[in-house]
Length: 465
Image 1 (tube, rainbow, N blue to C red):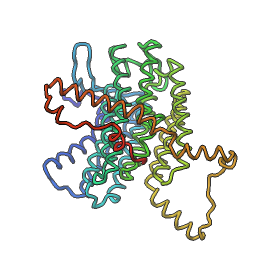
Image 2: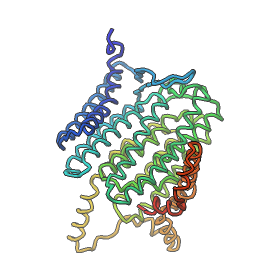
Image 3: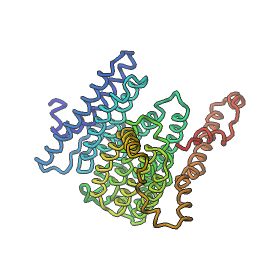
Image 4: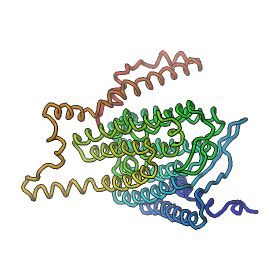
C-alpha cells in the first residue's frame, strides 16, 4: 500500500490546503538563496496559483464533507518528536469552525497578492514582500487547521514574525523599525500566555490535542479532563494571548503603530486575518472558558473596554489608516463580547464579515480620500461634518475630556511602557547578564556600555503611530 493509499481523499485535501502556501514560500525562498532573479510576474503567478489551489481544495473539502455527512476530518501525518510521555503530534483538523476561516484566508490572501502585484510594482522589496506573504498564509492556515494547541503555536509564531517583518518593510526609515520592535515586544509578552497555557494543559491532562481535551464537535463541546480551577487558569492565560494578538485592551497601542507597513499587509494582517487569530483561539477554547463563568466574564470585560476605547480613539484619529485600525479594535471588542456570551456562530459570522469589509476599506482608503477631496472641492468646501450625533448629546466639558482621552488613545501606550515593555527589557538585560557570567566573559561585560532604560523606551516607543 502506497503512502497516499493510507489516507482518504478528504485527508489528502486537508494536508494539501495547508501545504500550498508553504510550497510557494519554499520555492521563492530557494530561488532567493540561489540568487535566481525571478521577475515580478513570475512571483505573482506562483503566489496566485498557491492560493487559487487552496481555495479550490477548501471548497472541495467542504462539499465532500457535506456529501458524506462528516462533521470533522482529522489527519495525523506523524509525530514531530516524542520524549517519555510527552509527544508533539502533527495533527490537522477541519471542522465547521476551521473550514470557513481557511476559505477566508485563502481568498483574501490571494486577493492581497493580486492587488500587491500592482501596488508594489518596481518596489525594491517586492520579492521580500511576497516571500513573507506566503509564509504568513502558511502560518494562518496552520493556525486554523491545527488539531492541537501545540501545532497552533507553530502557526501563531509564523504569523507573528511575518507581521513584525512587514511592519518594518520600509527599513530605510527609522520609524517603521522602531514600531516593529515595539510590536514584537508586545507580541512576545502575549505569547507567554499561550505557551504557559499549553504547558499547563500537558501538565494537567498529558495532552493539548483538541480530541483529548474536548468532548463532541464544535460548537457543541464540553470540557474533558480539566477541573474548574485548571480551566480558569488556562482560560485566563489564553485570554492574555488572544488579547495581545487581537490588540485588545490593554495591548491596543501596538495596532496603530503597525500601520507603518505597506497598505496590502495592513489590510490582510490588521483588517482580515492576523487580528482575528486571537478571536479564533477563544472560539477554539470556548469549552474551557464556559467551564468557569469568571473566565467568560473576563472576556466580556476586555472586549467591552476595547470597544469603547477604540471607538473614542478612532473618532479623534487624524489619518485614515489609524482610524480604520481603531475601528477594527472596536469590532474585535464586540466579537470578544459575543464569544464571552457563548454566541459562537454569531462571533464566527462577525469575524467573516468584518474581515471582508475591513480588507476592502484598507485597500480602498487612498481612493476614498481622493474621492472625498474631489467632492469637497466640487461642493465649494461646504460639506457638513458627519457623525456628530453623540457629541451633541454630551455636555461641553465632558466632550473636551473625552477628546483628550481619545487623543491619548486611552493611555494604553503609558500602560504598556510601564507594565509590559519596561519589565521585558529589564528581564532581557538580566538574562543577558546572567548568560555572560555563565559563559565567563567578564571582558564583554566591562566593554559594553550601560544604556539607561529611558533612552531605550524613547527609541522603541517614541512614535505615536
